[in-house]
Image (cartoon, rainbow, N blue to C red; front, side, top):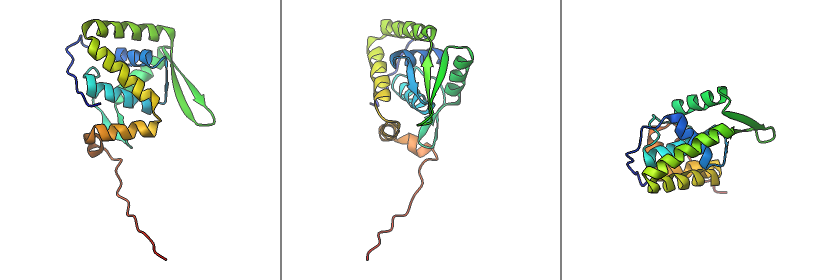
Length: 162
């Protein structure tokens, strides 16, 4: 990844970008950490996500993205399902949010088809990997994420010989 495309598009509301991410993800995102990671990659690759990210335990995290998701839940545009066995919360978009995401995506596609295709790839990539592989790929693609966070803990490795 790491194309860092500078996009001169209409100012994007953060909730609109979240809606568009859900639209591109097919309406379901497993876990807030995955959504945060996808939003971070969209931020880095397209500059459409205009928010500040910190790294918390290997996950690029934005309080503004978290607040946008909470507002969408309160507004009835997002719901959650919890897998009791795995303990994973899945966020599910309503039909109205999916329509909003499709409209946002169409506007971006009209202005810059290249960025629209890049966004599709970023979201598909973020949805296709396990969370641990996604976070590892972010750390490899964007080394500054690792330096700014608190996730690195040096561990001593001692080999024992008989």
